[in-house]
Image 1 (tube, rainbow, N blue to C red):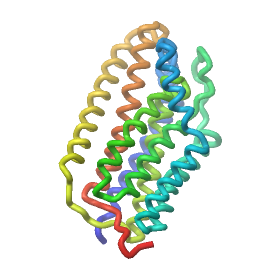
Image 2 (image 1 turned 180 degrees about the vertical axis):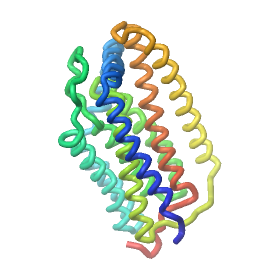
Image 3 (image 1 turned 120 degrees about the vertical axis):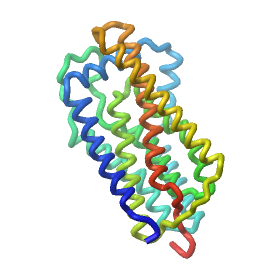
Image 4 (image 1 turned 135 degrees about the horizontal axis):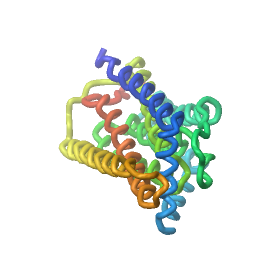
Length: 285
């Protein structure tokens, strides 16, 4: 075997456990709901231009745009002369939505444990829009040639990372919804990786172009800084009543930072499992 499946089993297990932890901590506890509701109230303080920008970005994700994007991902696989790779990459996006919609509509309810101020009761766990963005980037990661992997991530990742944060800005979702979506994407990505490995589509490739390393390290540093900013803002705000406008604003900024950091860490975690590994398509269909 070219490589051990252990890395992807670990990723699958860790992402699944974290998904449960996030749901229990943020959705099933009064403290978690209070924090996230306060963060959404803080979004009321943004100006109309920021709100409109976030709403426009989210409204561009429609059933039609999702279908076109999925077909484009499949087309890349076909250009690489691999029907199987095209199907697996498209399946990442499709299965990600199946899991997300099943979780938020039928399996994981959001009980009202604290009094809700404002029209926030309809938010759901996990975020469908964030799942779309993160499964698209993971599907692209798998389907593009190894030598173009870094460039593809550089071009697409800013959009993918921003969608989760935009759902908070537009008050479509809470922070836990976006983090949950990141984890769903990792679960599906791990399953797709295991499938490709089992089918013999994985091979070693130890080349590491310098620009790719710069991007990975740069993204990691940005994620750590965002996480640090979020922790500072949240820890300071938590000392005061959560209904104070300044506290709500700080928690909104913290949620924004955590959302961006979570999406970046999710991609980097998946990327790490594919370190020095590429998808082999020669003599495959």
